Image (cartoon, rainbow, N blue to C red):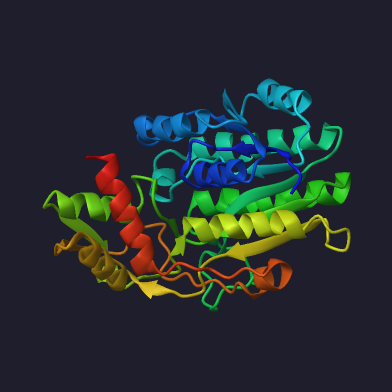
Length: 325
């Protein structure tokens, strides 16, 4: 496989870190772009980035996506074959109190990536993170890419849907190849502290209560981060075919939804300790169920998720204990 140069925004983030590691393993060059903001532990982000900076072929740029001059400069200094745009203001509940962060990062920042790609010499393939949150109040399962995605229940999902529409317009107007990635409940080692797996493991090990929303009656298509990465790389390989449409959108999930209580039971087994549960009402902005139809992704690149939640949670717990030892 010929070596390429990739831009990955959000390399100090959870998914971006794992993707960059995989690309470097394959002998490619990676330019990482991240602002190391304090939405969650900066120390965790710095630890991820420190591992990447030890790798040959990795270049790190600390900057904000909203800084258009910096984004343009990066595109001028490097000849990118592919851009994985993963950086974003994440989190559903955070958007209820800090909506402006989602506009500046997810809307303004994505516009700068699209504009820089539009005027770059070789118009790289853009693969951009979306989310299962775009499906919002959909009651049809499993969720398919051609289902309605016009009723998001939180601003985070609304900005991700806006990114999809922006990507479509730039593909149509300027000939950019744009692939949108609808991620479903990603988890695994080096995961975010604001996500359920991290919070539950931490609380159980510290003998504290975990908050279980909607009495545990929630369903998620938990998807292990390595499977997410394989899906992204498969699309990067397959979507450069001229027969493929310039714009397309794909679910990347496990296609095996599990209940929240099953998830908690798997955590209890992995940590060998029972959880103390505090039952809570349904949270504003939450979605009751996610369930991805991944047949489109499978048809295009042969995607087949490999990791069940029991094994994935074991891997997370092993990492957590080692990292926080």
